[in-house]
Length: 115
Length: 114
Image 1 (cartoon, each protein chain N blue to C red):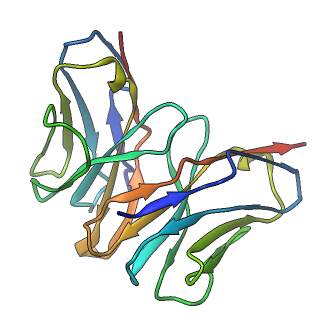
Image 2 (image 1 turned 180 degrees about the horizontal axis):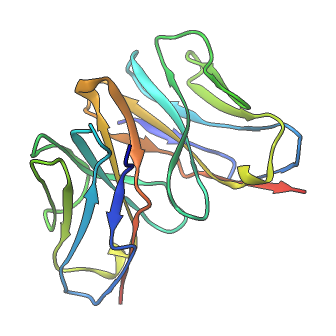
């Protein structure tokens, strides 16, 4: 079974600075997807970024980018120029291509942004 | 384009009762997945429906059941509620066959069991 580990329960960053959230996962599969979702206090899970395992190039979405290290099974999220609106819970998630469409989530990292 | 919606927003039930939660998928999406998120935890996969059939299930007992309707909306039913069923229930829609394999989530239903 796949597992996703987020070892940082809480992180804090100064507004306009850069922060990196860590995620590792365990799988025996070679093809899969990885996601970062943001969950603000409003509770709605919002997709931040996704990465296909077969792509070597790291995904980027505006201020958000990932460092995908397939051999190390690591998938970290970098947030540049942090904004107050980035404060939220961030969840890393794994999706196998062989076990349907289910997502396996980590336990989350709470990000605080200091003004 | 309408996003994923869920109803109700909040619900309070007592132990032993039954509850039905509802989800309307995003336009064009034919797959609905349900997740349970306990306080301070990541979401846990309950089950998924594709074209009105269950298409995968997590480690949840049979008292968690569901339906998907021809318009792809879905219901989650929980019988014989237990205190540990108190959680945020999230619905997500996608359309893997249509090239949209990313899951888009609704705002959730907060269930409290007393």
